[in-house]
Image 1 (tube, one colour):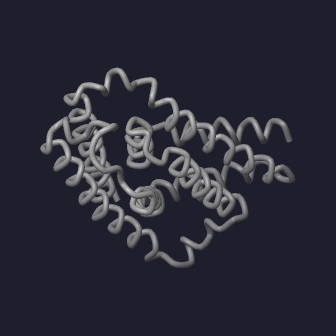
Image 2: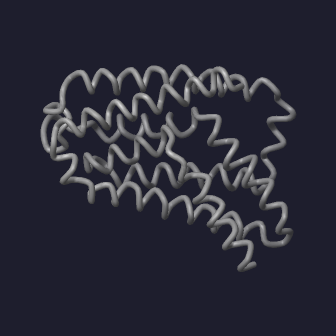
Image 3: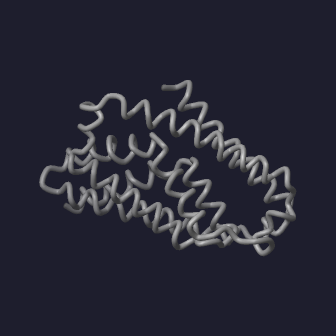
Length: 201
């Protein structure tokens, strides 16, 4: 059981660690110190649900309903293109508008909506959590629950570290230009992922 739990934790963290739309958003919210706890919980809870689905064998649904994969892929492409464009627009607005202590803060509902769409509209999330983690958990018969719980804990600890650890970079992002660079990097990340989904599927 301990081996299953350790593997579940490590595999989950290694899969989530790669920078992507969700991680970039959590980092940005952490730097802005806006609704960080809610964002961390939303991401971790979403992963926990998907991991549970994978561990319990829900991955077989994609084989029975072939069009789901394509629908998720193109829905993700459209959303990532739009969100990336918004980040480039924010960068063009200038660093002063992006200071975390200035301007109107985004509402909790708006932040959570964006966070959940970035999570659930990304086909890679399903590949990593439902398919990959689900298939790996099958290697631990009798201990799949321990594997899944540890994987969910790995997800939570990573997002908490990313969201709350981002404030350590606050001195760097006290400069407006740094926020402009961040928005450009996030926007480019979103468009790169969208291109990968569009042309790699």
